[in-house]
Structure formats: structure tokens, C-alpha cells
Length: 206
Image (cartoon, rainbow, N blue to C red):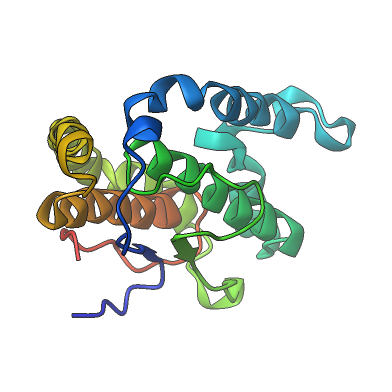
């Protein structure tokens, strides 16, 4: 079943055996790219000489507070902020997929690779201008569910790590579960933080 929710996320199931050595040493190989993504919030906070008090970043450096203020007071969502958020989230999801062993190719800073995330540029005048003030609060039930799903996904990744070392293959059921958790998380991010839709995220993995 293909979801019609505005935030679309998927990861291609690898059609070839995964690299066992790269999987075994994943935590060490990922250190450079984790340092890069860890530096992005500070880069976002100080871009264009803006005061750090005027900018708030969420995971990976996505711009949040300025977008809230622009939607509420000007009913505008600057295209460059939207593009920054979309491409930053695409990059951070490639890193997450790499850490979750879903892909053994090193995360690219600009190429899509096997990880696909997309959401449309919103027509802000069709959105509720006051809802951005409370979306983060309305999403609390999702945070609770995602906390437990995240624990399950971590266990699935550990099991998959052993499976890949012995067979070179990510068990398809575990792969689908981990991708589903990431899909759910991205929908919540799109709703509550990048503010691209007023449609409440569904409580499902698909």
C-alpha cells in the first residue's frame, strides 16, 4: 500500500550482498561523517551573521523557529529555508540509514543514493497560520510511540548486524521495520518541525 501522506520516505532494499567487513566496522567508518553532521547545527545557527538567539535548530541543523515566526506573522515560508531543511534531512537520513546498516555505501552529502525523502513546498496560505505554534505539542503522542519503536529498531539493527556478518543479507522483515520507523519519524518531523503540512501524521509504519 502506497501512503498518500505528503512526507514520503523509503529506502531501497539492497539487491546485492552487503559488505561484511564494512558492516563489522561501521561504527568506526562512520566517525568522519558523524563529525560533519554534528557541525551542521552550529553552521546553521551562525549563517548570514544572524544572532544565535534568532535561530533554533532541530536534529541535523534544520531551521525551525524562524519558519514558525514567518508563517505566523507573514504567512511566508522562504524557499531557501525549505530547500535547506529538505536537503539537510535527506543528508541526515542517509547517515541514519548507513548507521542502521540499511546501505553499505558511504553517505553522500548531495547524491540521493538508496535513501529517498521528499515533501512538497507548501502553499502557506492554505495552511493554518497559528498551528505551527502548537504542532510540536500535538505531536507528543508520536514522540512516546517513537521512543518505544526506536528501542525496537535498535534491537532489529543489532540482530541485522549479526545476520549480515554471517549471510551478507539484511533480513527483509527487519529491514522493513527499521525503514518504517524512520518513515514514521520523518512524517512527524515534517509535520511538527519543518512545518510542510497540517495533516496529522498517521500512526503506522507503512
